[in-house]
Image (tube, rainbow, N blue to C red; front, side):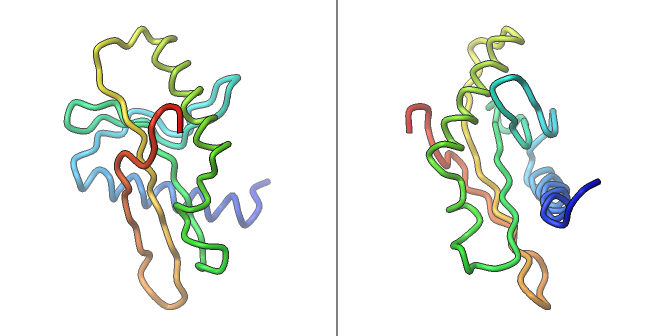
Length: 123
């Protein structure tokens, strides 16, 4: 059974996929999981392998959605991405970490923003 927060996240991820695809991203995987963690989306864009965290919110009361990607979460995403790259023998492909923010404000169209290179390995 999916709770309301999980449902909001799924809707946000689907909107993020469409938004990214309209900007030239090719979505390779959704919700990649391994023993180290989970990455919402893995995509290719302009020759880069892009690991994407999607944050969806209904208000700014707790800050912007992108601000919710904590140091701990960034570290987990990096470790998971490193596992993915090693597991699939990916070499000589530039990688980056993007964050997509989806904000459902009352009575308005969802606001979707991409933060390319939102963080780096070691941050």
